[in-house]
Length: 51
Image 1: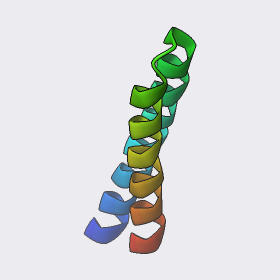
Image 2: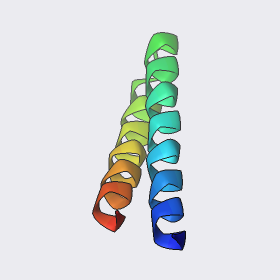
Image 3: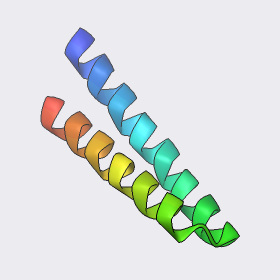
């Protein structure tokens, strides 16, 4: 149960960071958006693999 909860939290964090990517891209901060996208991809991947 705990592993599934942690996996869900990682996916949630990844989706939160995807929203940050859109926000930063809208503001014209492309480097920040790229770093945030990298973090989102890692978080979602970790959540899916952890599941």
